[in-house]
Length: 434
Image (cartoon, rainbow, N blue to C red; front, side):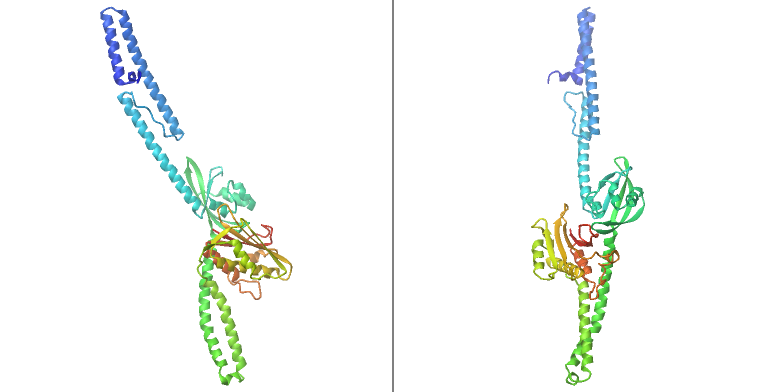
């Protein structure tokens, strides 16, 4: 304990009493040495008191510095203090405890909101007044076709007007942005709001992919239309096919002059039923039954189907070699067959190549690229290739790519035509699985 007790109120009171008593006794006895001792005791009491006040001020100053540095672990000693000082330091210590709890709760809330922002499909950019990017979530990078969003200058790859649009958006503004990225065309809606972050004004830009929304609505409309049309057509054609088949087997018709006409009606109606049935597949796609499978094994199965002629070579590249995909293997196989057949038709009789690559990125999304060295798809055709029933082929039905897009939608992924030459191939279709 030492002499710490002297700094207590009791210690200082005893020193004051002792010093006064000794000084008074020395004066009454004309003992000046006692007077000097009494004055020394009183001076010592004063010095100890002032030292205690100074020490408390220093501790309070250190406490304030700790608060400025977000350190709430400080604690002031309360032993051997006066009653008033002890109450004050206990209060300060309790304040530190409460502030530390508030800090921990704030850290937990910040982590919670960061996880939410990182998980949403909406892109979020937080810009300071000088257009410095304070924060950007992964969805913003994905929507802008960038690996990481660190500066607005990165958007100048799409043109200076794109970067200027982002810089000049103000609170309450809304705009639309069309980007031609390596993964295909993207249409974004951008909204801007303003708030305060760490006492500084910031702008929050909210980015949404409206092309996917429009595609989904368009696809749903086509599916509904197809269901109605196939239902009505089948109801009308089925009786014709059935009745004509019955007449064809009647004895008075088989060898009569009407046989050829009835057979033509039957063959035409039967062909039309098969034609409509192919459209029915578009609107009655089975629900995916996902399971884990090796992509390499799926590609080996495709190679065994002999759907590629001798004038076309097929190469594959899978990284890593044991890359797996969690999806419906039958539907994925059907998509790849459609894409390979399209590539074969595009190359035609010429010598050509088809290359299928599969890989994963840092977000663990799986990508499959189906490329070929056939003629590039014109821009006006590329905009419509996923529209149901659109085709440039004389014998095509126009549902292959739209069917593939529906399969990817049901599988929680996307299909896109990459920009010509973006990966070294004239034509590349990209399948992206979340």
